[in-house]
Length: 295
Ligand code: FES
Image (cartoon, rainbow, N blue to C red; front, side, top):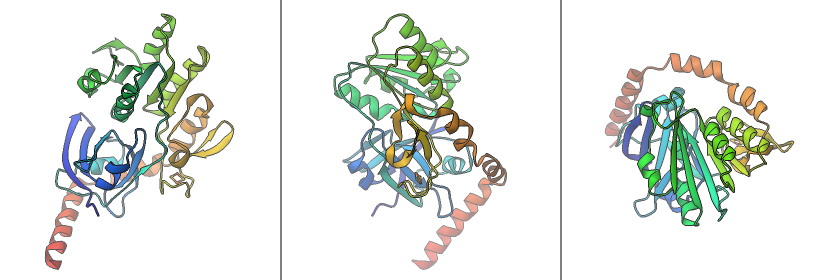
């Protein structure tokens, strides 16, 4: 059984961390688009994270994690050699991949890492892959070089225009559509607001098949708790078992953004305010002392 040990970790851009973790059981079965649920310690929240990459021989998985709340901040304070309390996966359905023709992949913030394994697979299936990566500014862009080797085109867009075109993924797509570029399939990963805007655009401009990986609050990851539910094509679906990738044009985005993802905002803010990294260090020290005493 793995001990979920971090073999490598660094902050690739401010607030986004790359982690390589030893979990042979997950690496062996992983498929593009699937995710894991990680717990930092036995009382921590379960965080759903898309598998960015994996190495079956080394028995490792690669995750990119963005600091947004208490649990992800705890991960930010972990170091190589530290272990997670648990990692469960691979979970969810693999992304829908095929030889579509020309595929546009859009990733923003944490979504840049999340589209990596999907881009690799789509390239292997002989698609013409156009990757769009988006960040607020050039300091927050990562994996650009890595995407060059698995994409036919890489387009960079930043909110402030500090690198690439000024704007967002939907602005780039809007231009591509206006120029008459052939697009057979679109996949997007990032915040729900960005994805809802892309969805609205591609629905309006000829219903170009668009698939979005929704980010949801998750608890059990097996379809039992209902935390990740969303309305899809008028029916209730669970992101953990029916997704996380869905046909973006059938998602009730308004409900997902307005209700589902803001449910615990107050609790999250409060728990983050009471978090102290010193407590985490002290806890680690005491756990280590306990283990040494037992040995
Ligand atoms: Fe519980 Fe999906 S996380 S139903």
